[in-house]
Image (cartoon, rainbow over all chains, first blue to last red; front, side, top):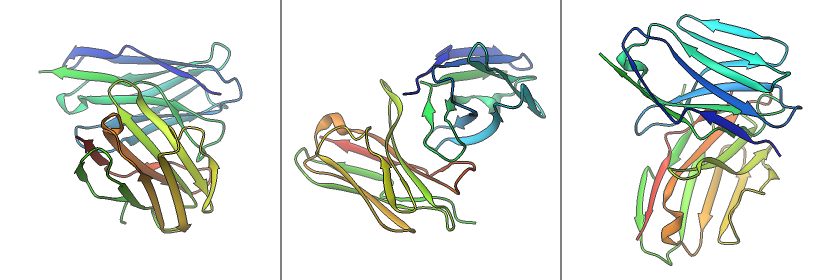
Length: 112
Length: 112
């Protein structure tokens, strides 16, 4: 089955800096890669996703890149703000809407 | 629109007692997922349903855990008997086939 590895487990940046979180996956048949943000006491919320027919996707300060050959994908947050502080999870599955397999999460702290 | 609704939000119970967690998926969604979150193991898929039918229950830890989905708008996750190691946050999530998975706010379970 699918296995998703996520690094780093914690990341501290200064406000305005960029943050990068990386994930690798094992199942070459996986073709859907979402990223979720989880704030304290809440459920994970989708912030961006990418499908395997695309190499990069941007949404304002957030971007995701995908390298299918190497089986890794990354989340990039530019101009970080304190409200970006949260736990971020990457995930993968074979088809959007089927069960997601999650990485272990990255705790991002943005200090002002 | 109402999101995924879970109850109870918090439960403290004694070892050996039965615990029932409830979930109401988003109306119109036909896939439902139960995940468990702990510090050590992250977000683990327990079971998921498509059109009320269990598709993959390989993540259910043992026979003490059972899940049902009697209709499209309700699911339960039952633990009987509960043990301290079952303490975790249990998330229910739903999706319309092929689309974004939406999470509930979670049920925080403590077994003492």
